[in-house]
Amino acid sequence: MKILDRYILKQYIKTFLSVFIVLMFILILQAIWLYIKELAGKDLDVVTIVKFLYYSTPVAVPIALPLSVLLAAILVFGNMAENYEFAAMKSNGISLQRAMRSLTIVILGIGITSFLFANSVIPWGHLKQRNLRGNIAKIKPAMAISKGTFNQLGDINIKVADKSGENGEFLTDVIIHKKNSMKSGNRTVIKSKRGELKSSLKSNVIQLVLEDGNYYEDLYFRQLSKNKTSPFVRSSFDSYTLNIDVSKLNKVDINDETVTDNHRMLKINELYNRIDTFSLALTNNYKIYRTNQHNTWSPNIINRRVKLDTVKENPEDLLASLEIFNQRRAIDAAMSKIRSQKSAVKNRESQLKGEESRLAKHEIEIHKKYVLGIACIILFFIGAPLGAIIKKGGMGLPLVVATIFFLTYHFIGIFAEKAATEGAFPAWLGAWLSTFIIFPIGIYLTYRATTDQGIFSNEFSFAKLFSKFKKRPKSPSTIA
Image (tube, rainbow, N blue to C red):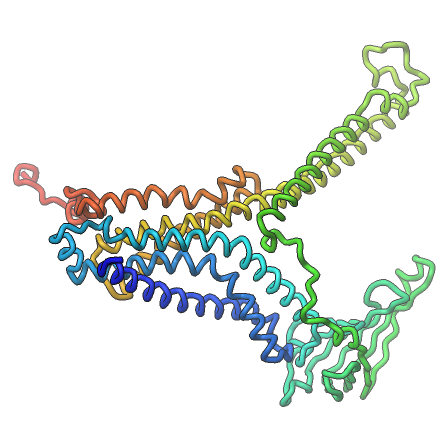
């Protein structure tokens, strides 16, 4: 390897790793901020928090990796152009293409590695993070009662206006909905001005002492008419102690993995198996629905449901041949049937759209594993020539340009995937649309940079563009 290749490779790898680490740190902090409500107040140990951060790291790679490739390319080639290193290379007969040759091999390696990473590590990260979040949600929190919302503890739902005390043990304006295993619904309501948690929340029984409140309970009768008219029982209390069994919440296994069927958790071969299963199920559902609809509206079925005692043979007007009473019955039956079928069609349509959307998500996930590697390669061929053209180093303009390019690419991908899951266009196009858009941009910028041209043509300039919109002075003849 020549000295020039080693120099460019060293500069790029050093910049790429620095940018990648910073972006990963930012994205992991964003994940913590995004799930802060699920993590806060759960009395989690350090090991569990470190596990959550560890599992969140692969999930952030699809965003951090392409942006790091793009930004590092702009920074390195922008610094070299600003410091006239490209001018020195060109004076010695070394073109931009030659300077990019060693990095091209590295970027191809990053693309292949990212595909393998997307097919193995990222699904593992989604699996671990999703199940860990679900298990954390089931754990009894150290501050089990949050302000302003109903929280389920054992067989009660509790809501408080405010909490105070060192451990949040003093409660204000407590509302409790208590369930009864023998009756459906929340028939018991307890309201108190103050409350206090007497026992440790780490025990299997929480002791809640309520003060200055009321106890409401609906009376239950077997006769429905009495339930509608019967009053509720109300009693007041100065102090009321409520013991809440939370033993089930203490038995949650933090390492349990119950959710394994999400499309983001599957590898390519597993996705293909799921797609085959879902496609077969969707085809069978369409066949069953068509058969049911045909049988429902079959003339033989309709004739068996209508008594034609007063109908003549082969009448020209079936409705007119019926008696008035039977005409009304036939019209009412037809209207009821139409309303029923309309509702059934809407429900079936919603169900089939859900199955089609599920199938599209699995197909998109397969293509996204390939898109990640291809996007890294294309973004490099956008960043490298762009840095050589703008001739600016540092974290100012290159960061702005890289952010604009990547956000445009990322948001186009999000909207395309959303539209594809809703059936607007094929799943493969939803996954590849953003890549198809930036691909010609990479070719164009590479061509302009290797031929020593700017982003636009030589005749183009923003000064000329804006000069067309300036107000021209009126000529003397026009004023006269």
